[in-house]
Amino acid sequence: MDSKTEAIVLCAGMGSRIGLPPDQNKCASSIAGTSPVRHTVSALLRAGASPITVVVGHAAESVQRALADYEKAGQVRFAKNPYYNWHGCNYSLACAVADRPREYWGEYAGRVIIAEGDSLLHIGSIQQLSNQTAQAVSLVRSETYVDYKRSVIAIGEKGKILRYEYDATHRGSLPVCSDRESVIGESMQLWSFSGQPLKQLIKQLREYKGEADRSEIPFVHSGVYSINRLKIQIEPVVSEHPDDWINLNTQQDLRKAGNVKWLIK
Image (cartoon, rainbow, N blue to C red; front, top):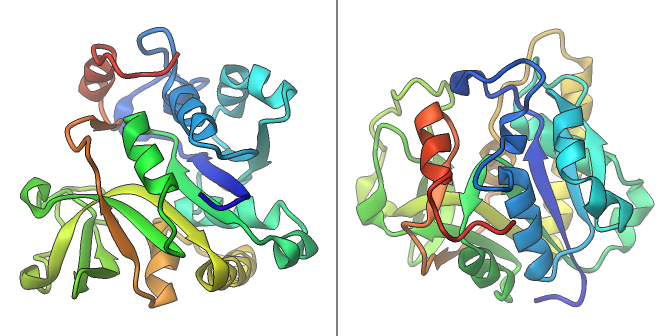
């Protein structure tokens, strides 16, 4: 791991598909004595990332309560997405970047891990990614796990990821993958960037936020949008825990998460 590693965890979305009360963010849902965001933050801290910027929006207080002790210890800081019900999660990522002054990022020489607060990953997978030395890394499952109606698909050549294809509408209608011969695997929604790729991403996200703030229409892009725009080669890391991953989109997902044994409390 780089001598300095920070992380960004996205928790601003409304999660309307899961059907929770309006004052409850799904990332702060009670599961097996913990919550999704607490598990993720705890795993990132154990993997050496600190501080961790958690982007909040919908029912922000529930997320902040779940991490209050980590905030008090200086291990977690919060950035706000005030337009969480208007723009997509790429805007949340841009809010995390904009929450730091330009000078901070200009001097920053470490790595940034990007995670999603409603994506439960085994700590072993997070440690796998954090141990990599490449400047752009993506956690994936093998092609055998790809569901062409639902998965975020990593596409590339010569063993490197060049872009991601995904269903931006969340309606289970992912267009037929344009080049299935180039499928590397299913993205597990965990990345790390350092060096020039990180500088490119930060610059791009600042510009994106400016465009979104001036727009009269919503920018609904997924966080993968800005990563795709980098047009770089990304090193895939195949998870050693491919079955220990839950995307929390439904009540059934929450019930499943309540039964797993690998959550950190």
